[in-house]
View 1 (tube, helix red, strand yellow):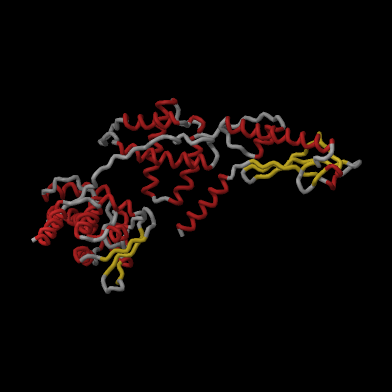
View 2 (cartoon, one colour):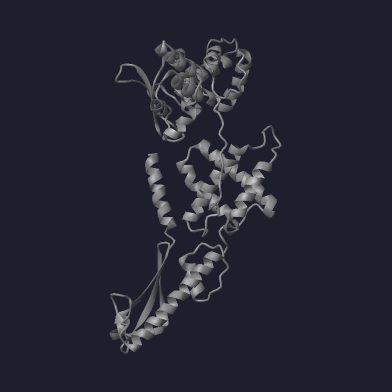
Length: 423
């Protein structure tokens, strides 16, 4: 269903971006009077059409080439008519250009008013208009969690507007290269009043990427004539993805807690370590997603909520035992899921307690489990990166390659194999 929505949105976007001007002329032969017929100018803007009567121009049909929509150029009268039509084309195009330069979205009515000299106050397109249109479309196509990230970026933009323009909104014509550079600097210098840390390079980059996607939408809609991101370079800082090594994983896995909530979170975390599921995909997992594969083993078959990419993962014994443990859990049965529902925020809070009790000196979040599956469970044990990428539900192999680090254990194993060959 969602794929159809994406296709539908793309079709709508293509229609919206066809903001081209078309001009042609035609004679209304059926209105001929005294040997002359009126000429009409046809305008098409963004798919909307309208005909304007040229009251100052009446032509003799013997001078008019119906197939070409202009006068025959081999007569003096025909050349005179065509020169007049060319002047009209230039006039309309200049009105079109002036409307765009003022930051307005060109419409057929606005262009007609300009041509006839009708002064009508129009409001320029603002950033609020862009946000409204973007969010209306994106809420259909993007996951709820992804939209929350966009809302955060939009709140930062409004703070930047207030600081730089003393307003909650700006005209899209104010978007230029300097605007992007100033917004980047604002993000780096922003000091949160809550517990959050100032943004690092990658944090700033995420907001700039979202802004760029919204700006590209404005460019495609012809709401702005140039892209302010042209020539703007965005840099990414390479960081190692946190994961648990074999010792740390066993320390958490073998720990029993007297507090039931800690045991529940530990089991969910360990399950993700052996399956590679992200939080939202794990929490939504149902028994119907557990199937028997052609090899006779149990598999997880689902789709990543974030990208809709299919996930097909054989279930390792450690994860299978955890599934069995929660088969008769009352809270899980109430939601029809394998595990009881608990928020990601609470899980991450409880994981800090678990780390303290197990001697793990790392900042554990639930996403560390996914990294652990990619690194410690699979890649370091010789599972090909293409297979790991498929199980993680990555649409690009390059996304998986960030996990392909050379571990100390792998170096030791490889050198042991080499030593044996040399001896």
